[in-house]
Image (cartoon, helix red, strand yellow):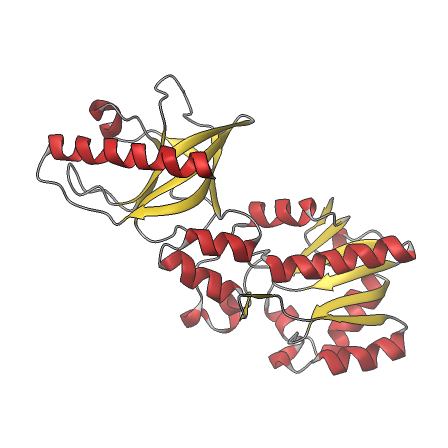
Length: 310
């Protein structure tokens, strides 16, 4: 997939395109429907498929007081869009100049002049241009003028609920990673570098990989989870812990992964992916080391059973 970080990166004389536009702040099933429609149209009409998105959520500029942590980071987002089969991704810097473009200016400068759009895919509630003045009807009118078709995709529903980033975030905040995975179309994940920690887990007989706090991927509710750790092309069953480790020594909130039944792995400084499968229990403060070790053993036994069914 070609990656363009500004309009200046788009090749001059861009071939005719099938484009979808959006925040794609989770690349969930609803977003995937847009991406698929764009690639399907590109294949059907010999167009180049392009995803237009932004380097940050518009709230970061327009409403910072209500900005929430993203579900996925920029690297995850690009990887997921690439995996969806898009041929190019244009990630526009969401700055004041972009926010002030009128709907007509947005379409003419970005979609028509730069991308040579012939087919455009958007969701039913798509808004664009300064103060969200542009609607689907605006796009259809501009499409007639500039010579591109507009395909409007209905929301994706799961169990009668509309798939949305906000709903997925609520599920993760409650620890319901299993339902979140259904809405995402994949397990939710965190990607980061394994750092050296206090090595308290190793002292207890359960070595853990401490994931950098700069990792990409929203951390769900504090607690213990069954999951998988991907490293160097291998997938390992893992007990995951999110929290502050109160029993021995409180630390800033961290994600730790203990690979089950392995104490020979050296994961330091590697970039790993942690996938969440199921919430096991809430954090607990234990009376001493022996009680803590007993709880960890029980957790590992329960997690083996969960992952054997996964």
